[in-house]
Structure formats: structure tokens, C-alpha cells
Image 1 (cartoon, one colour):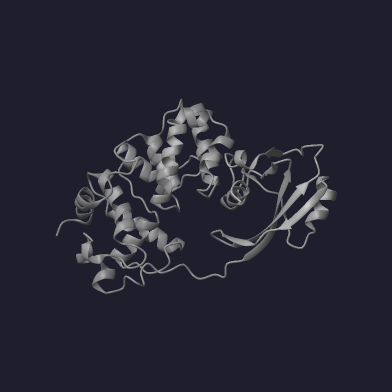
Image 2: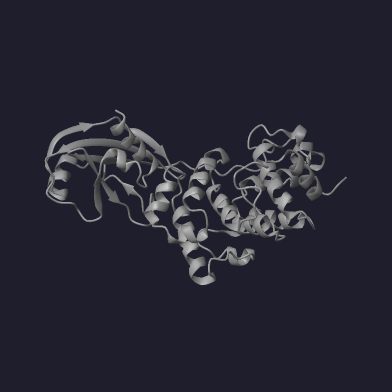
Length: 344
């Protein structure tokens, strides 16, 4: 039987993905951008974002020279916005400290903002041919099933074992095809549910397949009750313009333009009058909806106000027409609400 790695490489060259917009290049900028966008995000979602991003910022220097608001606006809707802020910060760091050259050493890459060990290894392997192991979610699943590794992969002990296994299986040559093949195999064949074991190139010695344990491996994350939170958001309208406020740089939706938020039990009209200094002429409570985050569910109750003509603009706020606001860096649920103002 051929080695594990050679079977992965052969399969990838025949059946893997070869037409994604960040493939057929060893440009580290594009490889890096794709790897960051693909963190916890499906390929089909990433493709249009990637294409728009590289059209606007075609290289590292262009990204470094951009305003953070412009970077976040192109990222709007992709989620996990710290990725965009870290990407921008890393680009500026590389231009300032390395003259715009991207490092090839995975240990050096891992020192950049927002890049962990696995992402650094993927960039080094795909862009520079460095022989190093990756361990993203798809690869963890492949290795846990093939090696019969029990335990939740997020557990430190289990993860350490998977890293050792990943490094032991590396090929002597063909690291680019092997790295891509491991990611492709997890995404296309060794899927979370209903894996297509019949076409898997390593099924002959896969413990989970041979022992019929694919449904139990890898061990699922321990179940936790996801907290539920409630918030009011205010759509403040004055003469056809909507007020947006800049969120703090850290935390949920950090650095984005959003809508004022209030706890669910606060009088929204009183807040407008007493805290913001606006007079509400008309108030309408809109239907509540839910937005899911990784660690909690947020129940959002929008309240729309038509205001008397304002006499001031608060610091950290701006007024835009709803159509112009859609060009700003907005969180996905806020974008939905603003879109409804444009298209009632």
C-alpha cells in the first residue's frame, strides 16, 4: 500500500479543487488572504468576498495603505471582524518592518496578528513549499477518523496528539498538493455528516471506516447551553438620513458602524430625549429577530424614530442616507435593517 501522504497527493491531483480564485498562484498575499477568510467560513461564501477584496486591494502595500473603515466595509457580512482588523494590522507591520516582503518561515508568519500555527503552516506550505503540518478543522476530522483518535479535538491533550500525528504523516516532497489535499478531503469527502468513505483514498486503513465509527469520530464538542441576550437597536431618522455610531475597536463588531443599542427594559424615547438630545416625532417598534453568534444568541428589537430636525452631530457618530450607509462597514443584521429602509 502506498503511504498515506502519497495517496492524498494522488487524489488531490485528480479529484481535488483546482479552480478557486486563490489557487494557481504562489503569491503569499493571496494565499494569506484566502486562509484568513476561510477561517470558520465556507468556501462558497468566501469566493465573492475574496474577488472583491483583491480587486480593491491587489497587493500587500495597497492593503497597508488603506483606511481601516474601507477594509471593514469590504469585509462587512463575512463575520469575525477581528480577522479584518488583524489582516490590516499585519499588512502595515510587514510594510513598515519588512519592506512589504512576506516571510516564508512558519514561525515568523505565526507572529503576525491573527495568525495561528495551522494558518501559518498553510501559508508557508502553499506559498513557499515549506514542509510543515496543518491542523484546521477539516484536517482534525480526517486525522481523528483515520487514526481512530478519540476525544474532542479542541481538548489540549487530544490536539497535541493530532499535531504529532499530522507531522508524522508529512511527505518528503509534494507538500503543496498534500496540504491542499488534506483540506479538500475534509471539505469534500470526509465531511462532518455522511462522509463518502467509498471514494476516500485512505479508506483501506482508516480506523473509523474499518470499525464503522465515522459517526462517533471525531468526538463532538461537549454540549453547553448557549446564552441568550436581548437588545434594542435604534434607527434614528432625520430628513432622510440615518444615524450610525462607531463601535469600540474590541469586542463584538469591533470597529464597525452600527446602530445605538439599549438594554431591553430601557425607555427608548426617553433615551433619545435625555441622553442623545433628540426629539422623537414618531416611534415604531419593528418585529424582533434573532442573530446567532458562536457563543450566544442575540434577540434584536429594532425601534425606528423619526426625529425633529437635529441641531448637532454627536462625537463618534455620522448621518448617512440609508443607501449610502450600505456602503459603510456594517454588521450583517444592521445591514439587513438598513436595507429594509432602502427597499421597504
